[in-house]
Image 1 (tube, rainbow, N blue to C red):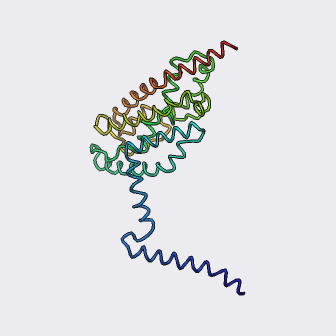
Image 2: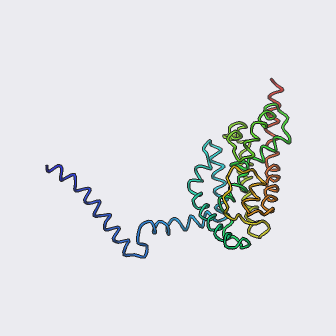
Image 3: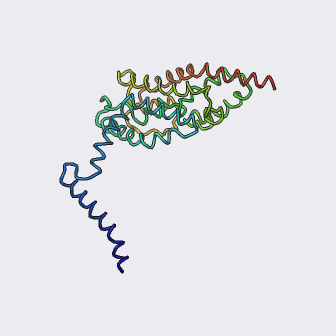
Length: 256
């Protein structure tokens, strides 16, 4: 019997402790621990997620994770997507009230999905198109027909593991550089009003470029034009590296 009562003591202590903590929070302006966490973590993360620096850092980390074989988008997205979706929702409220109003946030979920990560993590649509332009080896000529259809819909696992990009040092530099430059250029053009910011409308992440840019910016052609410019830039970034890996592969094929 004494052992049974002894087992209740830890539970009672825990209940009393958290009851006192709850009562303490109720006496403050925060009222509960959720509000405290919102102030301590929510606001700083929101400021980070909505900044150009945040977009650059997240792009960098995402590419590094992909390089070592971890799905970078899933890891960083678990933390950042709620923030970007919240910012996207705030843009949508403004847009619904006044479609011609200036959007309060530039970095949102569509900003990342449709302008930074065209073709998927690492902006690999540029890589795919670069292969179409200059590939001479049989291997890459065959691969390009397999990786292009999913790449157009922002699905790049075939590219990641088919080229491969994972653990391929030869492609690490453009894989990191392309999305970072996309983020910088997109942010500047949207901040200056050259391109309309994303308006918060829900566009599926598998929507192909040009269409997605048009829809995400509230049917502004400037979004599509920016995507075309970024794709060309990504191709230019990837071209010398693709030329190098294709040359080595062609040399290997000729040797065999």
